[in-house]
Length: 192
Image (cartoon, rainbow, N blue to C red; front, side, top):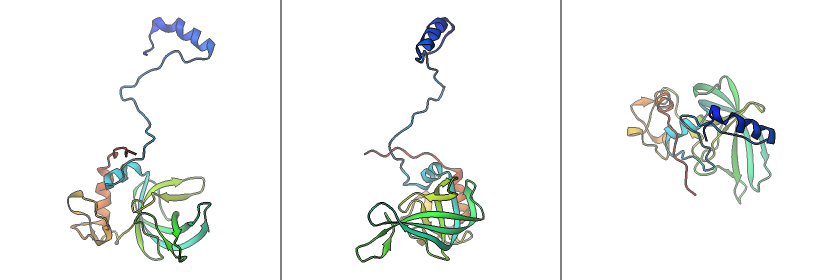
């Protein structure tokens, strides 16, 4: 319902009762979806991620079991080499999840990679200011093994390869992610 001046009396009466008398509609109404967003394309990932940066894993600073059976949280000190979106700079803490296999070794979820000292990655996800920690999306989406910023890289015609570190294109890692962030667009909601 749209508020008008003739509804002023109705609005005053409703306020006395503690109820909302009217609502206003914006030109572009927003709705909040409870469904997960499709992150299958990098431009969707770039739209959904407040933080995207290229960094080098320097050392593991924490490893502890979570309250989920077999799940292990790891914190890594990462040197930010280039920020594509967000405020990451200098040395940051990145939190990742690993899972203990029946033989006791650790593995990542959904095709993801576990960080290793000295290797470079593109991290995409969120920053928790209270903990000053970056949380990449899980699976292969949020932590990606990457060549150096100036190395040739990039899938042909915007396609997302399953193993981006195997693709060598005509643009650099830096060029690819700069362009992808610039062309970011929200992905569709995933159906259950």
